[in-house]
Length: 281
Image (cartoon, rainbow, N blue to C red; front, side, top):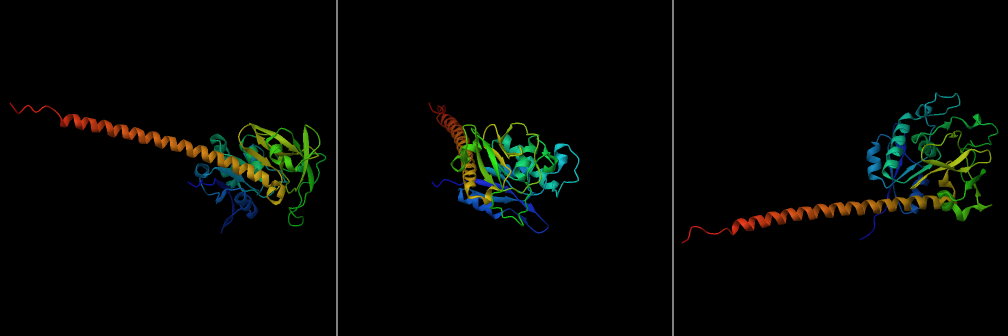
């Protein structure tokens, strides 16, 4: 029997006429052995999580600060509250169900907010912040614009280890692109910060168990980040296989129970058919 590939759910952005997701995300998932499916924000979050073996959250507009109990700053950009609501609920359900999650750019912010964290509405609220908000219309996303320091021992470190500049037993560095004006402030429950820019800004977070990773940079444009997509799809494949094995056991148990019931009815029929004949002398 051919093993089925894991289905990776991607919540797309939408306008009046279409729903879309970045083509490079789709290609990276395919290259890694997954089947990408783009969901509209109109889709019920429970349906998305139920059919997905992994969830990919991608770039997009700012997360509305109302979701972390703040009023909008004058520096807040474009928001999409409907998409916020859907993606936040998807994260909650996926974490609860053990579904692997990878967040890119805004996706990292959604993960953090969904788990009770907060954001800087604009990075220039932070003293001595370096430039993070490069414009992809003028600077290619394939350019490495600043370095990131990764914590040794983190899952992200292990995934990217072959491409890191390892400086000590405690940390390593890698150069990334940068196109964001918001950033993680307080880390959400069950998350830890595992990568930082030189100004201290959090550049990656991950869960304390399972596959739950968010990175600030646009990983799909950097070839050395293909290993991140592979690790994500592999985690989704493991969950897919575990789910199928559980389902198989449930079906087998139900079939056995049904057969036992039929066997019991058969014996009852045989008993009634062989009753003594009291009409003969």
